[in-house]
Image (cartoon, rainbow, N blue to C red; front, side, top):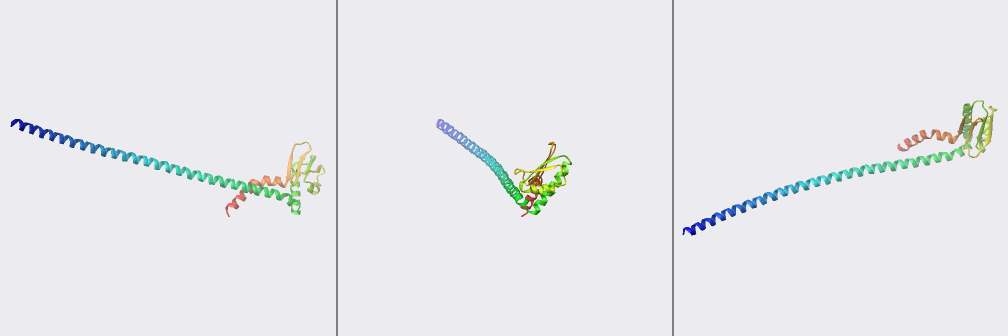
Length: 193
């Protein structure tokens, strides 16, 4: 019996050791699974945070791009509006020259232009329908020779006979000189509506 008792004892010890090893292996598997689950959750959270940050950055870029696009649209619309206003003003100048007020404006421009030219001989080119008005305005200056020219604009252009100076006395010239200030005023008024 001693051999049978010994075998039984060895069997019990082997079973106990096997059960202990199995329990240790199960505990290790559970520990590894928990660690892996924690690592996976951390990785998933990090990936999610990165994706949220990327989406937020994309959204911010989209908002900035939309703002730039809206600003560009606004600037293009403003430019087109000012171009139409400029064309309209320019188109009204010739009609304005046919009025008494328009002819008075041309006379004032001619008088001012002649102050720049002094007593030197001067050649003037005037809008055909304003040649008489320009000649009358130049009557006090004997050195001014006035001729009609259709490409002048509304008013006259003066040039010293020696070519040293040219003076624009047209309503178009006044419009172009005043346009930057007028454009700002138009924009201010339009934006305040």
